[in-house]
Length: 143
Ligand code: 5GP
Ligand code: ZN
Image (cartoon, rainbow, N blue to C red):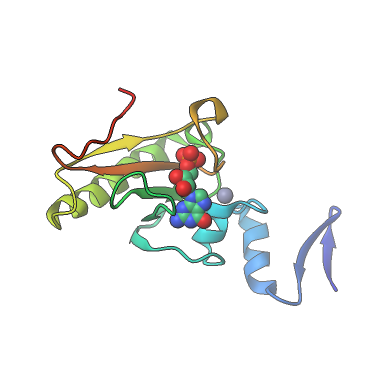
């Protein structure tokens, strides 16, 4: 049982409040893994949160402390994200990276943004990667 609008089920008996909110503000895309992490349906090791972004450890780390910074709203990638939000993402990047450096978990970092499949994007929800670096850690980057 539930409410159907425009052929879509708006909410059912299980999570009416959350689903109604999400439908109204259109911040979530069905079946998007990062939307599910943002709304707490899938657990993550969260390391940072502000009004528009969260950061959590990557499930398949390419370096120790590999962190993804994810927009709370769903956009396909950087190309869809409003530029003002891009500025805020850079603030989040700096906060996360400075924390890693202050805590001795990094001496520097690489910032990676994969956009579209040709560039290696596998999760189609705007995000960027912080790869903590230490001198002589042996990690090879493309550039
Ligand atoms: P990209 O789309 O930029 O290639 O990378 C997406 C990243 O998300 C990958 O590095 C992948 O390991 C990570 N990832 C995918 N699913 C999950 C998940 O459920 N939890 C976490 N923590 N990371 C994930
Ligand atoms: Zn999403």
